[in-house]
Image 1 (cartoon, rainbow, N blue to C red):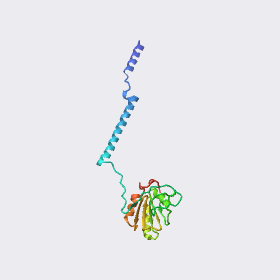
Image 2 (cartoon, rainbow, N blue to C red):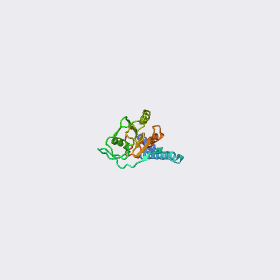
Image 3 (cartoon, one colour):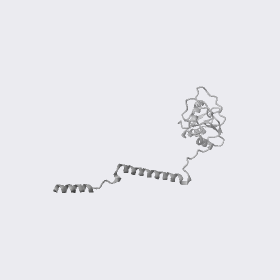
Image 4 (tube, rainbow, N blue to C red):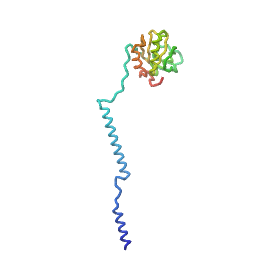
Length: 202
């Protein structure tokens, strides 16, 4: 009799024990995670919209300066590698068939091989050539330009101007290293998109 009453009490307690909350089930937990993830995505989208919409448009990458006055433009159709010497239509050349070997950027006090220098132009380099009889003070100013990335400086016998700056398909003749157009030319064409391989290092 006593055992019967005890069993009924235990059964009653078991029946009254609360069940786990429905929210603790695995499926409901995944539902919460999905809800949080969706909310985060909406918040991120809102932040991006506010940033882009501020001022009416997204921030822009600064454009390159334009080519300075006096810059000549040439169409260069061929950028193949050759073994022989090339007769270039421009002097110094601004592109065309060239050696498979390029020239590291920097200052050189002796003339460079055209075919190797043209390969360097292909990589978006500005090649500054100067007459061998240019004053030493002027040469020193040009040599300092090689502190800029993708700049090559060397003497060039037979120039028809004291200084000639060349890039792939572009050229500028100058009378003095102090001419501000030289820096403008470098800024416009070093790594310039008009060259076939502007992303290649020098």
